[in-house]
Length: 238
Image (tube, rainbow, N blue to C red; front, side, top):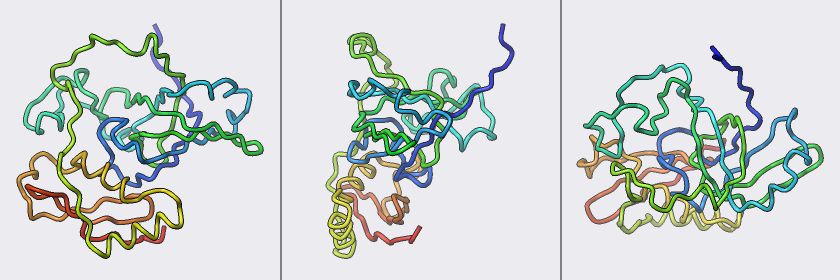
């Protein structure tokens, strides 16, 4: 039996998510956001990704790098259950695991080879900027989809069905971003806030204003009973 393994990252994530708060709790919930997987020099070879462009989706095996030194527990409180009910760690996708490994399926938008560097542009990743990637595998539709699979704890996507309202100042920032980048900051913010990043125990506080970092912006927002309100979008300059 193997007592221990040494795993070497093969790539790193370049993502709009600069902190854990606000990242969708599962992949595929913020499909307006494109992240880039940058292969590390030792593995950055066009030959290593030959044929991968034929895959519409890929699996990313990664390290919950922010949780490596935080330990683990046999029981955790999944946000899906309101943070009040405990489940065994292996019955959840909690990042606080004996081995802090995660697995995400993402849509592969492009394979780019630029000189001696290889980049994979992906859509729908739920990964923090700088996350180490341990492996990349093609998604196989004939075997990776199980039509009759069930898990009663999480049997459907949970997103808020509320309109997102932007202040005039926030709208202006979004318009300028779209003009300069060609991508919609409005859509990205709507995707993230519809996933309701709030801690479960604070969801009854409709007066509280939260902040989430996306790209180089600090976004201030609140959720009431009838809408999501984006109060301000401030550039952090980093």
